[in-house]
Every structure is written in structure tokens, then in C-alpha cells.
Image 1: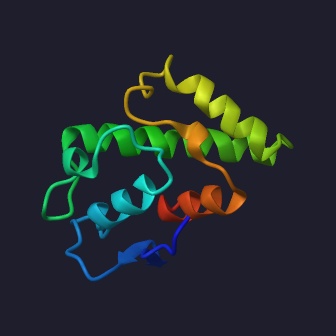
Image 2: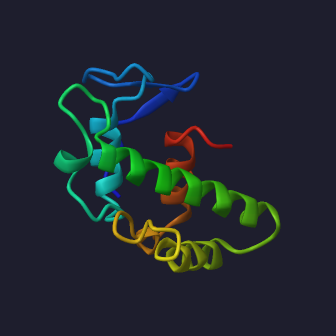
Amino acid sequence: MSSVSVAFAQGTLFSGNKTAPSGIDWNTLCNDVSQMYILLQPCSDLTNSNGTLTSAGQTTMSCISNGLSLGLDALHHGMSLSKVIFGLGLLAQPTGCGEFINMNSIETASQFQFLIQAFNLH
């Protein structure tokens, strides 16, 4: 993945773009995540110009966040990252997230770690 333009400090995203009321500039985060080919819709459909999420964006980011939470739990219980990613890919369709994300696109531990940090999960 190319260098990530997102930096978090105390749970708040800092970048050159406007930030949403949550403190996260979803435009920047969406563009960074799209570089991993996880998103099945363009960021223009997921974010507004002011850095907030559209309805589809809220669903998409919730799918990613919930999947990452499940993945973290599985990792903490000893499952390998490759099995976690495979499992998240299998869960996308039955959970309704299959039209929004492709978690199988995560290729490295550093990408998974970036997502964990970007979504403020620990």
C-alpha cells in the first residue's frame, strides 16, 4: 500500500481536509481504504464533500468496523491473520456487507493494523 496520509492522535484524525463532527475526515480515510481495494463503491458515493458519510458510507464503514472487531477477537483467541481475513470474506455476504466491502483484499498484517488504528479499535 502506498504511504497513508492519515494520522491519529487521541482518536482524532488530522489531515489537510475538513473534518466531520466526529473528528474523522471520512473523505481521506475512504481514499486510503480504497487503495486496499476493500471498497466496492467509489468514495464519491460514500462521502460528502464536507467529510461526512452518506447513508451508503455509514453502512460501508460499519461493515468494516464490525468485521475488524470480529477479526481482532479471533486474533486474540489464536487464529492466524490469513484465516481471519478468509473468515471475514465469508461473513460479508450473509451479514449484508458483501455489496459494500471485500475484506479478502487485505493482504498484509500492516494493512490490517492500519485499519485497526484508523477505526480506533484496539
